[in-house]
Length: 423
Image (spheres, rainbow, N blue to C red):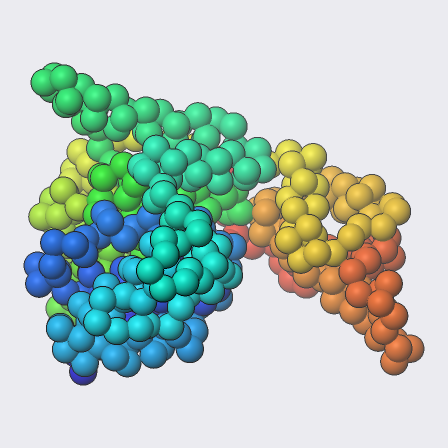
């Protein structure tokens, strides 16, 4: 039972790390190899099954297992049964025909992202050869394309490409017998809320996995509440649990400066000390990205010598321009398959110009709030007459854009833990 539960947990984590909406057999395959560890046979390796996890999706909700994936998980009652399932799933993904020893549910085109070949008559070769697995260069190119697709952030994208370039050059130098000039994989992301820090961190985690800096390339998100306890002895345990879950990937700590904001009775210092020790103990297979406001993060890193020596690379995230925020609104509409009618773009621009004058403007977070409020107004308009015409399903009109700030309703306040009155 313990093995089966581990496989289920690993499969969900793999699907979530790649923003897939559903846990599919390919995620179960990855999970089995991860769970077996040294017990996995030589034909089942993480490097061999990793390519089946790409391309990434766009889902944000926690994925749930499909019927085929749940069936495969339930069959893993022992290591031998799990190996049999893994081989069957691998055969399904690599090409037509049943896997060795058993016939696992055939993965659909939607689930695997690969079209199935037509059935061949007995004794005949398949009509279509299986598609080649993407190599490291293709995975990296796809991730960089995902990075480039983000609105704005030109300076951030340039810094991330430098990180990739360093690792690729090091790999080439190593092949020629030259020493590597390795830089720290730990990063400090600075900037205001809503500037894309979390989105970029997710891509960086996957890039680190593709480059071999970490084994898995997943990302675990944490905040002060996840790391600091209220009683003596509990904080270290909380930090250890979070860090262990991130080994093989990236630990992302948003508003990390909050760890050092407490008084002398606070356990934030214990959390930082434990984090630094575990970063050292797992330096070969763990990267940590901390994020927050520029000034606060600068103070935070310099509050502890261990942090100062490990975090040496800073990437600043600028605020979006009005035009870039309008692009983000349009992208959200496109993702929701909502068309923007006449005058919507101009009204959104005007709303953004006004909103950006307010202190602590939320950048992309504000745009999401604006889009959600506009969609709510669109829904109210469409159903007002109890009749929904087909033409009304996907068109947002100018009147749907709220005239007042959708986030208003109280005194202006910062998003986060900052306590000082100004900047």
